[in-house]
Image (tube, helix red, strand yellow):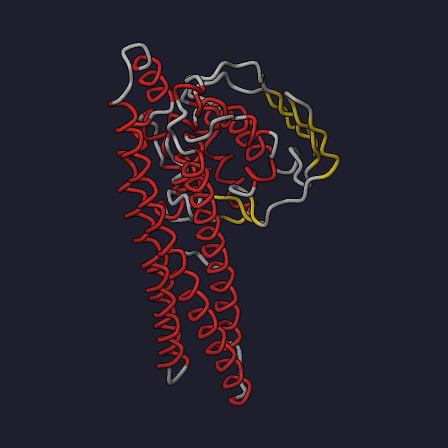
Length: 360
């Protein structure tokens, strides 16, 4: 099981804003800071739990917020990448609060199955195969994150509890819309829904490919270790061939998938630009009575920051895709060009360092 680096990125972003020391990252953990700060990456569940344990110890010793409160601060930290933009476009926070499996899939891979799900107008209760006793720090962060979801839409925070394997989330649905229906009749809801769906799909696809790359890299390391410990030339040749085949499959699969994601990112950029133009046109044609309400709504959803972050999100996503493609090709080249074990070990070690994926 893997947990998303959105969590570690949130913690480190909070530490930076509060001026807290991050020395524990270098002394108590073995993961590169760049990897911990990438919201599209994944960490093995015990690794992230250990990271959060050291982070909370450092924070509480300095009188700062604990892990749960940092989760509650998520709307202000802007540490979840494109997911932040998706959540700020929510019309009704309860739409995602009542579908916890959808939200958890952004933070847990593979998404855990939920059972005994009980929904009402203002709450949802479910059981999840992740215990608050086994992962106390991670579950407390996610509890705070659940409570923070309505804050993205300028609504009061929700209430959540996570005890053992049971999670209860409640919220208030008796909230007035920031803009009356008559004020938004010119806004195309299909465009916004399409935008949100595309953002979610691309975010999940990129995260899945990151996790697959980590698993394949660990498999390559296992095969490399077999080569190092093999004395029979025939066995060594067979193992090296298996490694070459695995690398070729990995590269071909990633090339196709990442090309698709690149096209999706381009579509997202077009959707976001269109939505920005739509809001601008809509705002410029308001009556004096309507304008204050619309401006208040835009401020509450932090529209200015969303539009400012659009180019950054697109650029960062494309750069990450290019990095994955480059590393996959290097793996394939390292295997294909290797003539002996020493040459292969040197090449793959260089590729591992570039990828910043610690192998276990």
